[in-house]
Length: 372
Image: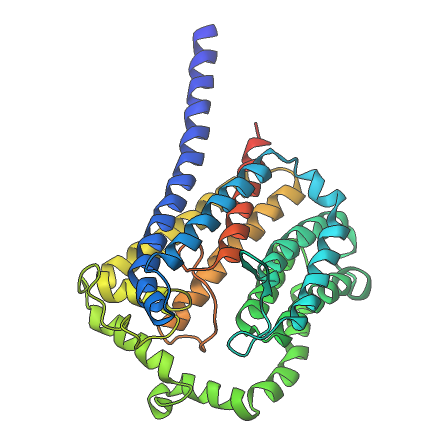
């Protein structure tokens, strides 16, 4: 009898170890690929800015170190703590999203708070805030979700305020991501499909007015036919498609990208998947997508083992955020979605995105720890 219990305990330990190890190895793989390509592509960008060739990869490496520290902090914090300090988290995020407008615009957008050593992007914090808020709200108000005014709308208003501020920066990609994740988690958490479709229908007219005016109209048309706008708003997409198409099945080989030679802007951030596709081809790009899907399903597996609704929705919110963000990035590089600046999780250059992403992985690992 004791031998059977010992075997079960060993098997249980192995399952837990393998589960966490697999998730960790997948993330390490993406971090390695990211640093490799940030150096590969970023050295060209650094040269253009008269910086050392290691400038971007060094900054990314520092963000990864800070991110791992934050991940360990999250791993050792009880999940109930986020619920207790949720008002502070929400209003801090709201405050930072307003403060960002007082800092100089970078590339036409007020997305960053310039600090002595780093530029912090509050919209990345908003992703974490929205996930924690929804997990808490949907567990606490589960009985009122069927009531549109008292159950459904309060959550959508509070999250809509965050998304609206991000939209004004402007950062359409992150704003859309937050609302898409919020609506999906709301539906999983028990919100009425009728209410969700009603909100979507309500937002279509104002969004249509926004999209079909001036510059935004041209951006939309350039997405539909980028070659007609090659010398203006369609330039990035055309260069991205050239990179992906020229990679073929097996790619040109590491370091042999042509598009990174100043042809494709933001190649180390918003279009890093294009360069990976160019150098490693269809199969290399497919491996990255497979790893992203593996991370999603691994986190989802942890979520479905959580009996507590708050913890389950917390994990699912993180998983859906990573998956939607990955699909948005890949969709943009392939011309399947309008061009919006959004990072590929754990791969693209960006300190704020990296630190928040690793912190959220720490939360997932904490969820797994609390299952024991």
